[in-house]
Image (cartoon, rainbow, N blue to C red; front, side, top):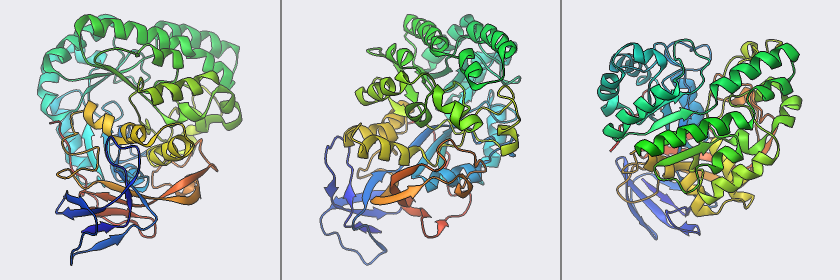
Length: 446
């Protein structure tokens, strides 16, 4: 295959390069001018070509919660938004991925459904400490890209870790040379604040007050201190507080991510939008948005992820802020959002765009040898975007099972025209998903 006439975003470059791409098999084999071939040709005139996006934080809920999402629908949504690789979380499947046995059960199901390439995180919960958690980590090591943990958890079968348990996990992870991921909110603060606010009312401001900025700050501070003491690799997921994100500045071996909803919305918006914007941690006060953009631009926050976690409308709208499901669909809007609101809006330059959509996550999780950039010898994972084409977010058009989105009705500039995974078109905006379930491959770290 030859892709001609497009403008490419190459690693460490500040400008688009008009070059052709030769793909043989699943790899990029040549970048150059006026490449010729008798094989298939895609004319990308007027289009921009980015490396396929990586969404390193999704909940595709399979097996166990497929009324909310499954791997076919979730990965189809990813492909429609230019995402070619996802990493699925261990906590929202039954059983959770806390042992090799559980991982193999999950893998046997999802490998037949994936449209995009995928990796998995292992998990360490409070229940893991009822057995030999270190042995479980060792047995999972060759199959996972990191280990997810929580300081506070709403999942009965995936309990939170206290600081002592978290420290023990960091020690094992240090020995195994693998990162630990943390949902960082302070348990004591949130628990007591929730008791108080539930008595006070049933409004969205009550919900925000249960998990304000200080709940993240307390958790990140303690986690960073423990990780630095041990010199372990720590990654803070879905940072919503600028002050919490600032704690990561200048730290070795400690990284962080944020999500589009924290960059776009604040606690005033949730009063207007309602449960479609209910996420955990919640969106915060307005000043956090610019702070998070600054941290993302500066590289203090390393990359973005969707935290894709949809639910049916009846779970999202129960009539109570306390029982409405917390989570939104996001993998299909992740790359278009940061392209439009980040790059085209002038908030981040091209070089940084490439880092936050693919390169930094690929490096963090050990898959950069195959993924994360347009280079000869790497997988031909590409997204072709029409930068002049506007489109409007419509939840009922999502490929995901989840249709309730806070981005409903928003206009983005830059439409994904084609998504290519390992040299094969998997999504075309005129034909939708054009590969069979199971085309996506299971990824392991280098």
